Image 1 (spheres, rainbow, N blue to C red):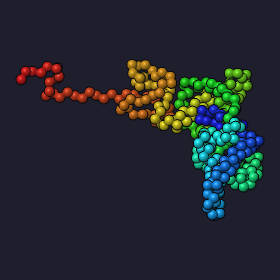
Image 2: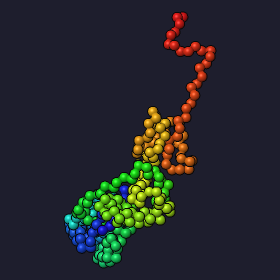
Image 3: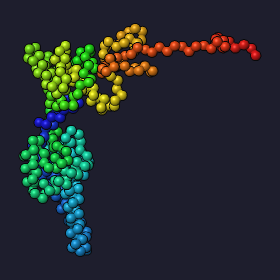
Image 4: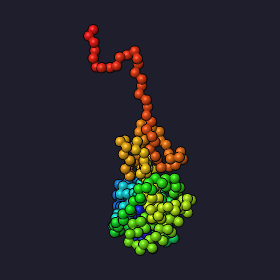
Length: 321
């Protein structure tokens, strides 16, 4: 099974199609294309019987390219990877990231398929599928696609408990680029099942995952934070970065609990988890000038403009002319 891990550390279970089902789908597609080729070619030959032999040969080659090469490309493009044979076998062609294919993917697969399927009678495609870990032929490798099974059972995703509120924004400066997808998936699976584990076993697993994560980020794990809370906070930071990358950088950053009362007014402290947005005219001041978690600055009170002495105060009464 091929697993793709999203920004939320959720594994997409893509089951690559096995060689027998792929071979059966290809045979069905070739049978349909060959029948269509014979019917269309016979009709064209009868309609162009008055032409010379060279013209008939050119038309035959054009029909071959149009039906046996262009036909599968058009079908896969319009059906988003579901040809007649694949639809009958429950298969589908998808991109490496699990998305639907486009015309360029179908074009590359179709052109290379002429060489590895039609010209070599499928020998090259079979060898490439047996060598590949995910059963991909050369057309899939060059096009960046994968043939998967669509008829798979749907699994439910476990709930990941959120980190403690006092850890919000604490790990915003970590470099998460070197953390592999497999480690993110292991962390998420641990967090969803840690309530079902023995306390000692769960603590040792959390320490091992936290040590591995700290080694990938280049920053040591804090000693004052439990390993499970550290894992949850870093996972939430990764999800927040993926959300900002997907929806833009204008999202507000969640403020830690000890926010300044001036940001919310009335001497009331900022509630936990509420994003802090600086008021208009108030500059953003990080803690100590170099931190990452936003702290509400003091409200800058501007003095009221002086009233000119040569003008009487406004009373709303206008004297008669």
